[in-house]
Image (cartoon, rainbow, N blue to C red):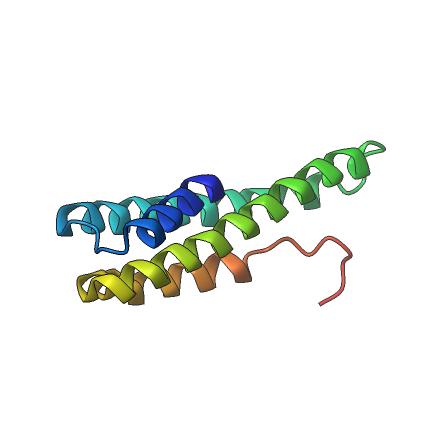
Amino acid sequence: MGQLYQSINDCLRVLDTPMPEANTAHLGRATLEWLESLYERRGERAAEAEDKAERGDYWLWAEAEQYEEAAEDEAMRCMDTAFGRAVKHNSHALGFMPQIMEMTRKVRSAKCNWDGTE
């Protein structure tokens, strides 16, 4: 997903024109769906971490999940950049921003606590 958002950002930067409104709306809807699925996955990951904590192979599983979570965080960073550029070129993109920002906040707050501290 990060590469997709990076590509969108690069296109907007090179073309230096707004995305068509229909594309902007589709991007907003698709982003919300992606963030919702990411939020759900992070909840599942946290529950799975509790279940696997006592297993001998926990750290092997945790290492793979931490890598995936880092990739998710990077994708969200690319998403932020792409939407920043989209809004710069087309104020209609702002219509999705409150929902996207709220869902992004929820996803970030659902990050797994790998070391057990708060």
